[in-house]
Image 1: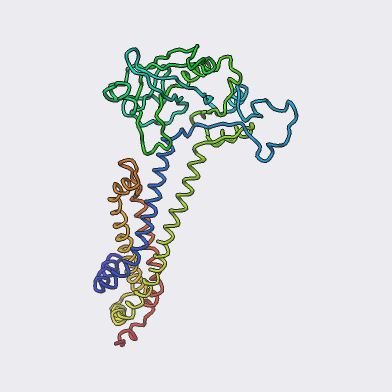
Image 2: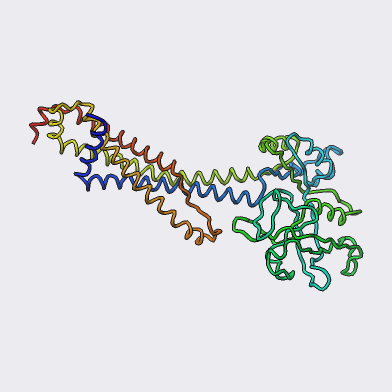
Length: 425
């Protein structure tokens, strides 16, 4: 018999026992549904985590801290063995030079602590308190208007929060781009009687307007400026003050194409503590994988239980069709043809179960907008992401499992003696 003829006959045999075929397929579909949904949730969770990482930091950026030996802080160290900065857990310009020489480090930007007295549009406009924030990395900022080349703020420019627009007198985000803002800077050490005796105004051009986003974990409304402008303000505010040019952390940008992990290990070997977003990403992905495969495990258990259902169904089918098998052999069907017939029937059951389960799992993607709304996520966030290739592989895998489950019933059918089979009533 031709393979095509056996496949068609297998399908016809299953249609003659619709109820039994459907129930067996549904048992498999429960497992297929659970596994498909778990994999989709895992893919969606990783994609959402990836967007969180991208919007909350630069993967090529390393945060470097002075290393403190835990458990040994109270032990005295030999005089002169380390700088005063290291004793206090802070970094200085010598540390920056040392880190800059490490292979793979493109540039170093210290975390400057700066402040502004107020901001204003200029004469005739009200003055408002504001925070200053220095954008040292290339993290993408959700923007309401304007653009930033390579996600960097040019020197002399500023990114204004959307919440500041009305107070500053801008009609909308587009109206603000290209306009100027005056930031009043004061030297903290020169404030006498509540007024600064040494201050200056810095004028910035609005390059863009940022906005709140559900994917930004620690959003704070502030005027965001370039590292160059931040350094200039820091040097102005700390000039002549003890403890200047000392930093709690510095940002090391890894050269494009270099292995971030390797550079991170090199900086650690130089005697510093280093944190990268890849560390956080790996930890989050590991957690998602544990939850994903834990949920998928229940699906595999359901599939395991359905294997016994396939075996039972196939054995019953062999018993019910003993005479039919005998007639087939009497008409010239070979043992392997009979065995194939029952294996193909099992494959059909596996296909139907996998297809039904996958269909209903994919249909749950229609709930993505509701899930995003329920979890207060950004519009358009899909926590269930299905990949066609994964579904195809799963269905093929279930067909293979079904064929393996139907092996012994098929073997029994193939070994039946045609004469004895025809005598069966």
